Structure formats: structure tokens, C-alpha cells
Image (cartoon, rainbow, N blue to C red; front, side, top):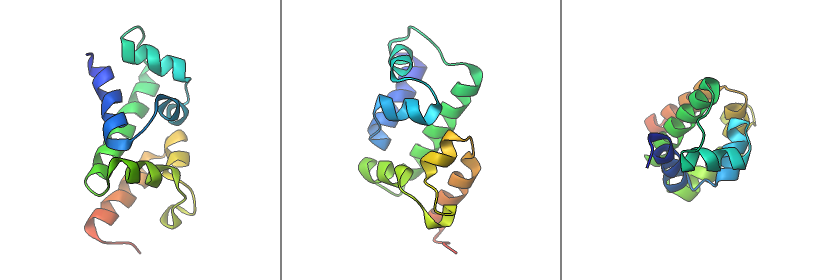
Length: 111
């Protein structure tokens, strides 16, 4: 298993995410994610960075939630993200806002 395939597996296990959801969040196609998983292709640098950030976010959520709950958090609107979902921010490359919110949740700071 390649390092990239392990990262995709981590997203499936810790974030209950399907390839089509990962593709959507990264701005690519499910077929492309499948080829990455099989070791037949590799993401461009910018997409790889988004994948690494997504894995980091899911890993942080794993400290707070079950995989299914982490997935629900990512795709649900959050009041503290100006009523946007973390998925929207991730798609747009605004990872820091999501990471900051998760840190505040972990520390018990919600205001």
C-alpha cells in the first residue's frame, strides 16, 4: 500500500468518507481518487496539499467524534463558521478556520 493509499484509507476509517466525497472536497473526480488509491496516478502539488490538510482535519476530529460524527460535522453548517460547513471551507482552501474551530472545541472555547 502506498503512502497516498494509506492517507485515503485513513479518511475512510477516521472520517467515514467515501471516495466521491473526498474527490468533491479536493476538487477532483472520484475516478481520479480511485487511481491514486491504486497507485496508478498521483495528485498535483496543490491537490496533494489539500489532501494532507483534509487528513489533518479528520485526524483532529477523531479526538472528538466517532468516524460517522466526524463526517457529519464536516458536511453540516456550523454557526461558528458563519453558517458555512467545514466542507465548503475545505473546498475553497480555507483550512485554518476549520482547524481553529476544532481546536476551540477541543479546548472547550465556543464563543
